[in-house]
Image (cartoon, rainbow, N blue to C red):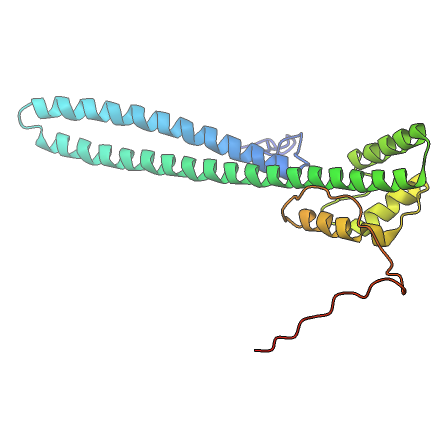
Length: 220
């Protein structure tokens, strides 16, 4: 009987895991290691049973022992197959999660790069001094790398650009940026990363200029 004054042992680790994703990965790794060990032990047991069955079959009047050994071998073989199947499932799950995580990081890098490009265009439109352009561009990239504006895949692109421009003292001409902002938002939502086309040019039609082409009515 345990001494009431002595605290009971606990299986809870003292260095409890805080990061949920890291804990999950560690658990899967331990499970794979345990399954690998079970497969190794199962194969060893199956080989030992096989040797016993072979020895029993060589002896007269040992049919019952051989049959029992055969049943034991079948059970062990089934346990090994199940362990291997679980290994395959866990490995596939881990690979799928790793691929999904890599895809998210790729999208995040693409969005940050495009945000940097669009802010660089705003900087170059407002500043003629090459040193100022280089300094502000580097600061914009650094701020994005430090995740100062939250999750770039979740926040609206216009809000992120507005925050960066405010911090850098820039005043963007929003209509010029609408096309690229829409492209960045599409990337953030999992769309295709198309080549950066630069800011959209806004051209005001001159009232004295040529008339726009008229639609052609189908006469058929």
